[in-house]
Image (cartoon, rainbow, N blue to C red; front, side):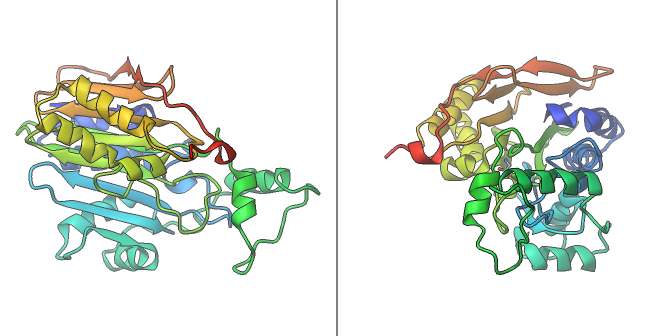
Length: 318
Ligand code: GLY
């Protein structure tokens, strides 16, 4: 049994391992671990205390994938329901012939299945950071009145803050039956354009699990993982016989080769069906965490670095 997670999963990994040790499945462990992060008030990139979009609305994305069946469930742009990972799992498990529900449909589904609702989702401290960011982006230092009719393109560009745009949680587990599951949850980029969906709820981009080969989950600038199909690519590299390290390196190199503007880095965690695990990042200093059934506490491990040069909009590769 093994669980790997992004470092912000520290709050949930031990209870996720407890779940595995007590007969829970890999899917149970992933859901329980991520719920702990979604409920963590210190966490501003996942769950109820995440940073909002440019209009001050919190929109959550999440996905979960069952490596035994390749079934998946995901939600995007969901407002008012903090446990996005649990709603995503229900999309997968209920009698519903869909994988991804977004916006009002996701909220309707969450309501219909009785998912926990928290109102209001945007706490005062987060509102204050959002207002401060808007004021800092305004020439007059005034907070603009943003309505449904406001032009937002310029505001999103001005308010983008590389220190705050990133953040997501990844969990991947292997249970006692050898089944693999992977889950991802996020509030997405801070100050994003309303309706923006990142890689976290996109199966194949931010999340992929297949018992026969392994699993991968991503954090960082989701636009890049969507364009490179990162999580699926890594698993496909495993499928064609590459080692875990080489598969992860190739997936990172695919990201590096993308053109366009990169205002955030990319990170991934991955494991193979033998239980080898790895983390990679486009910047140095990154870590991920892991725990096996014989460990009382999780350990940290350094992510290997594959540098991806940052490019801003004006410097995009032609
Ligand atoms: N990686 C999370 C996002 O881009 O939304």
